[in-house]
Image (cartoon, rainbow, N blue to C red; front, side, top):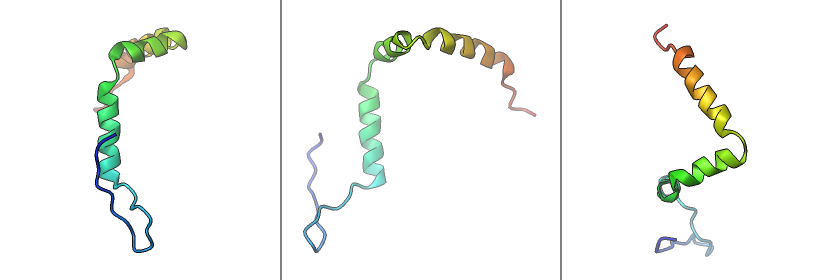
Length: 66
């Protein structure tokens, strides 16, 4: 984890992480995940073929200019 200087409440409890800080943690973790890891997860769960079919059909079905 990142080196962070903790701040404390008057009762001695650590302050909660700010939402922006949590978002940065999520983004940093997401960037470290390899594309092949995601593909293997879909392949293992048998969702890769379903996702490919949905992607092909979504190009035809999506029409946002109504």
